[in-house]
Image (cartoon, rainbow, N blue to C red):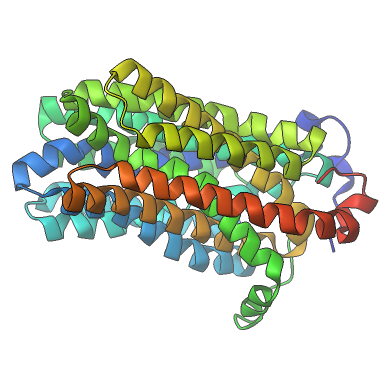
Amino acid sequence: MAGAMPATQKGNFWQAGHRPTLIAAFLYFDVAFMVWVLLGPLAPIISKDLGLNPAQKGLMVAVPTLAGAILRLINGVFVDRIGPKRTGAIGQIIVIVGLLSAWLLGVSSFGGTLAVGVVLGFAGASFAVALPLASRWYPPEHQGKAMGVAGMGNSGTVLAALFAPLLAKAFGWNAVFGLAAIPLIIVFAIYMAIAKDSPDQPAPKPVAAYLEILKQRDAWWFMLFYGVTFGGFVGLSASLSIYFTDQFALTPVIAGYCTAACVFVGSLLRPFGGAVADRIGGVKTLTLVYILAAVTLVAISTAPTSLAVSVALFLLVMGTLGFGNGAVFQLVPQRFRAEIGVMTGLVGFGGGVGGFYLASSLGFAKQLTGSAQAGFLIFAGLALVALGGLTLVKKRWRETWDAVALGVRI
């Protein structure tokens, strides 16, 4: 199932693959995620200026997530056909041009924010490029760590939460779109200079062949599992600024600080999740993740009146979900190494759909009931559904995967 690894990829993790590519994948992922969730920390300011209701606010921050989910499928196909480096370059150019256009033309309506959200979806689709770009350089025993380091680029959401409200206060929120293009251009230049496709590339397949993978049950399970871990992470990343301003009447800047702290913990723990999964197995790691996430989300659904308690609970759940993201992608390459490009797209699609659902449901719950708490409770139920699915498949996985023969824990 797995392709032969180049001889230079054996041994210690930092010497096993291609370090410049790993760094490039991280940087690309980092700035892409920064702009992907840009509308989240700006939402309290934009919604006030444009007079948006809670449902519109929720939809505005959810659209980039859905667009990113759909585009990940397309990127997954292109990664296997033209290579991850070239696919990533095309996506970066689209986002840079789109942000500069939004800045120059101005955004003055709800429809305009949705259009920007679609453009930002191309940044969210970076997931399906950065992870296989890094992964293909590393042998099975280092997949959790490689995916974790590259995937830690989701820490870019911290930058958006920290700086977007401050820049919007100083220059206006429309100007933030133009300012965000500056780090994108810098990283694009670095990416083109140091990233390199692994020689371990699969042969291009007809597009129809990619649909065949959906006939395998494990592909659907992975989409569900990541739909909860990553969906919860990115959905909360996009929504917490709104939640903190609505629930505790914080200023957008202070709400951004609270959001940044929560996102930072989730991003920081992603590589640790991959490393722990390498040691004890991804199944065992995810079992603990889903239990803790469900319990914490239920606690959040009780709407704590203390800001300190609320932030502590969000720190815990974001850390847990970030940890789970690393664990899922310790498992995916063991099962689908030859199809890692398209599987990264499919699993990323599942994660994006989960994030779209959570972010939009919080807004609609607020619109219909006056509180976002029902959205948290339903997502806790989805975590328990994922736990039940994992319990159903773990015995078959351990008995049938080639990873077992390679001595890799699952």
